[in-house]
Amino acid sequence: MAGPLAGVKVLEMNAIGPAPFAAMMLADMGAEVIRIDRQVANFLNADGNLLSRGRRSIVLDPRKPGANDVLLKLIDSADVLIEGFRPGVMERLGIGPDICLQRNPKLVYGRMTGWGQSGPLAHAAGHDLNYIALTGVLNAMGHADRAPTPPLHMVGDMGGGAMFLVTGILAALFDVQKSGLGQVVDAAICDGTNLLGSMYYDLRHQGLWGDQRESNMLDGGAPFYGCYTCADGRFISIGPIEPQFYQLLLELCEINDPAFKEQWDRSEWPVLRNKLEQMFLSRSRDEWTQLLEGTDVCFAPVLDFNEAPMHAHNRERGLFLETNGVLHPAPAPRLSRTPAKAGALVKNGENTLEILQQLGFNSEEIAALRDAGAVH
Image (tube, rainbow, N blue to C red; front, side, top):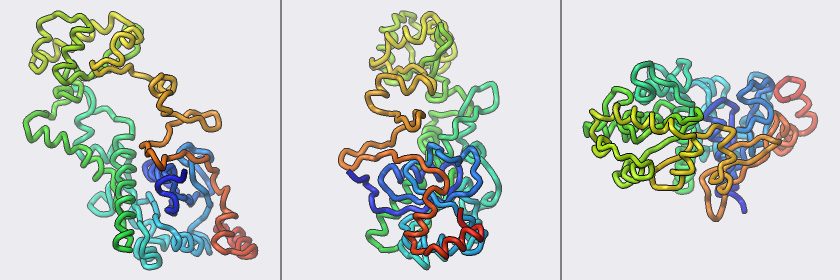
């Protein structure tokens, strides 16, 4: 069964981080994705990179004569273009949105940056950590007695970046069906992460969230929402926020201490957390798992990247795939009639010849492009 995006043609300018992840998701959903690769790869876009699945690859050097002719022909037949450069780079290459949309009015032009296409910081270098720092989100993460803890780049790059790029592209594709006109999708990690923080701004407005780390319900301040060390040095997570789930935790763990009856007395949280720390140190992670997993306590063992693929729930759900001996996450979400599928991994430039031929270039023209260094 073809994926839900079968027939959609995507042109991806090779970048790092959220842009290739977004292109991978579109490819998983059935889009035909052609990636414009560089001749020299790095560790983030190397041959066979797991984020490269489901594409075809052509190696082009836009700085060399003839390369732009190839790019523009690809753009003419594309539904979507994805690029992850700083503002102005695509314009200098001669393939900015004005030129592309003039040639292909239905094109959805997806732009992925950290700061956005405009603003005082638009042209400054940065990474995930910097972008989420500006939104207030980073300041809420980590321990109270030290600097904020850098989270994995899923928060900014993938959550605030790639997911919003995909959302914008799908929305624009839907609009093309009605209006017949494409548009530019300005997806910025800073913008997306800021929106992801909406609930916390609402909690602050209600007086339910403070700026001090580890003083709130969801940041490690509440003893009933967090991670604990076990006797074997491994960890567990609990999150019984609702009163009935909290009561079940007390019952299953045989906690009779009257201090635990006042779940929402914030002044007692540090004391209760210390007591829970001592209790969870009395058994191994697997012993606590045997007691609490699958109950309404809101419990899960904290697994590492080696353990996660082996967990019974993850195995039954098929959360991981194996490609060339490497385990990696399976596509998501799950569609009942047109499910996503992980395509084969691609090597840089392995489809160069076939793509050029499909664009109508003859053998002499291809040889000239190769001799000029425009293609590899």
